[in-house]
Image 1: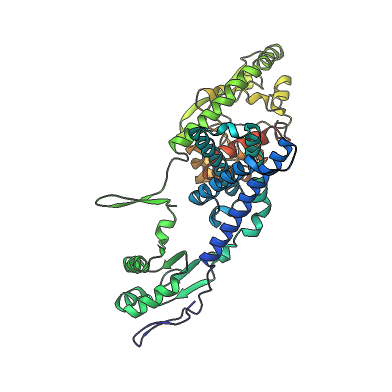
Image 2 (image 1 turned 90 degrees about the vertical axis):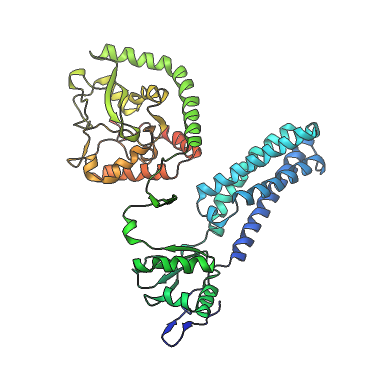
Length: 462
């Protein structure tokens, strides 16, 4: 990088020598190309190997052509969707998701082209199907194992920080420039200075400026003129946790919230809920009947325990559970959490709670659309932790109600369940719930649902 100084006249001098050389875009592109080549060759190798087993001998032929075609489609789709971009490789979950979806799209497009060209009979459907399954598994494995090789460090991010009369910023970037409060004004008044400043910033992916409020408009013009992604720090807005801007004809508004899922995502999640819930109710109906009979024989009272809980958008709904306590001792508001040796719990109820079978009637809530299979668990309205109501402990508690409550959730599979004796019992759950909502995907729902079976019997389930 040019280490020359930005200057203007006699009084204007800032030093760009402190700027650490950013990671080159060429290097990033080279890494992406290497990853794309390795994964494309892996797909071709899979088809050659499966084809050899299918035919009983090593040969090229249709299997290689099929593999090469799918590999090329995978690379094309992958670069279009950002499957090989460094940013999408940082998270194992995101990286694998992009690889899997790009592979599926490549196979779908290949099938479509074969159907249109009427050449499908030349290729083995079994080899193609096995190729799809093995390719997905191998690419997921390669991304998981090789993630550390291409994951960039936070300190290597191509970000430059400009401190011009504003607050100091905590950021891992090593590229920090300090200048006078009126730096923006001087840049705009001196063509040579602006040119050199732009030359010093051209290799950075982002330039973040911390400056006084009355200098923001000038810095916006500077950043727009040098053609980089520019960001101007706004400390007063930080507390609002903005997620974007909405521009209208006569004003600009700060976006501070949005639904956790788009219409398309909600439709996918609902279809997934129903595809699991309806068959589950049919298959489990004999067991549900046996539990109902056992409850009636064990103690007097209704089969179901109904309790008002907070659901999506903080709306009340009636949650269903198998009654596990004596009817006379039922706690409809959740004032007192169940303890390990709680005398209110019946014999059958204790077994149901330990095995989490008492929650099965909430499948009816899922069927009715009041709950989802996976999501933040709904709490009783009077529940407390450390002697405080849940919303008195953390304001972020309300945020978890932006999504439908779940039969299970990320907090539950992490072991955060049972009574809330202290405040951390709640805050750990809130943290997991908000993480789930921010990073939702149908794959995450499937993983959580599978992991739930491993924690049905849990020390905190009593």
